[in-house]
Image 1: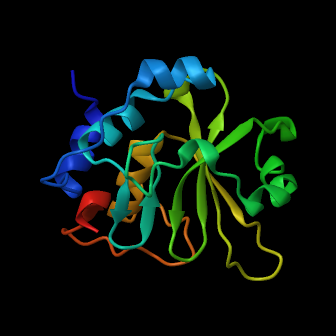
Image 2 (image 1 turned 120 degrees about the vertical axis):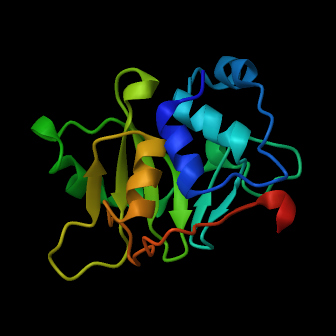
Length: 176
């Protein structure tokens, strides 16, 4: 059964004609001991690695030939600013982070890996902020909900705003 939020995302952001990426999710889980959220798995299968509106790059697990298949290798300098993120979370508890998307402005969206994968929230590190403003934003939803909120203008967590118009474009790595 299709994920309801991914179905809404498809209306805002049509999947590429070339289709998504095939990932052996069971093999990835065995190798990494990491299970990914259902909305993300469906996104990868429908869209693959690539870019949203030439601004957000979405990473995937390794896919032969894909420059976006680096999800499991990503480490980001934003992690040096974890204290600011901890200040936004209850009791300052900082769960494990995993980056899954990057903006052209150098911002990074991470999963806050706490609890079951389908309950992971999103935290965004914004590289460009006014002095004294926390660079982190926590979004209470998963990857697909986050993408919908960004594309509709309900959330504005990045250094540059994505225009909330009716036409958004996803370019799969095969089309680049």
